[in-house]
Image (tube, rainbow, N blue to C red):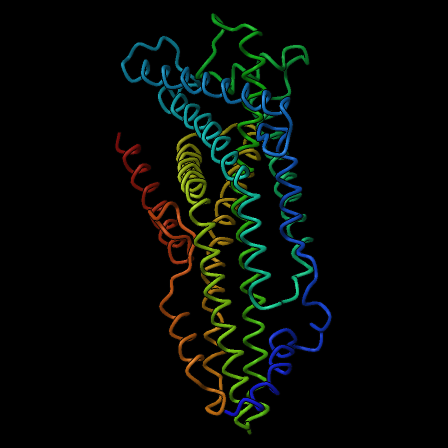
Length: 419
């Protein structure tokens, strides 16, 4: 191509790489809405023990929570060891080791969740700058204006459901036949029988444990919420890229006759697209390294408590309407939250391949070397969130885990029946 023809195409190329569908005009440089929304949620976490966006007072408060959780974890593990060694004098609600082990795992998850969430949010400023740099140096795509509303709705939904489930658990642990002044003692002896019994019950131990139990529940739900929201943001960006590909392919199908300058512009547009997908996959891998420990902790913890709830439900007939309601609501909420974590993260992998469907519709006149490279790149580049590389979060793995849970419960149920 002659130099004069190339210079003539530069302004056209700049317009084509910024603008795409008509509704996208004048939106290319809109302010990002996902990152500030998530930052506001992370700032709120200083109230329950993650002080990244707080002052020294919040740091001291978080340190106290960390030390108290660590103390409860150590005490719980000692109780488990004593129970396994046959030295325990009290049986917690007739479950013995199961109750003590569940309590130890619950508080261990709360401790690790606080540490890992603190670590992730401490690096959020650097991660958000990296995300914004990808947005600026890549194609100028308009923002997903609905992402803010989706993030707020999901956050509020998780908070309301978690509070409702926990309030029902408190009612289930005490019942309605006790006097109000006896409620607190009954609740702690029932829910924390693996730590306290009548002989060693004292308020100076019980009150901090009561507060830590609520915060451990918050950490458990918050770690799942973090994974879901970040996965939603990564999926949203893939959706924008995929829509860009869809528009370019549709435009190529409508305008099949191209001059040499048009062909050159077409190649440059596809090259920009391919580079944008490279940057996006690199962004996902960066977040995968930081999210990996939290993903691993979340899935292991959810899997354990799902199996525990199913096993206890199959082997213990809960009495009373409140107990039955709590069991089904708690199990449903646990299953829903665990599946939401996996499906939200799996959507990143699913949408990273979705542009292949549009590329297969590209006409021969619009097909070029850059389209071939992009097709090869999307086909063979596995973009997925994982649990520190031990497992990938995709929909096939979710079905495999569900099948293993069913087989595990059937084996336990048959074993318990035979004995």
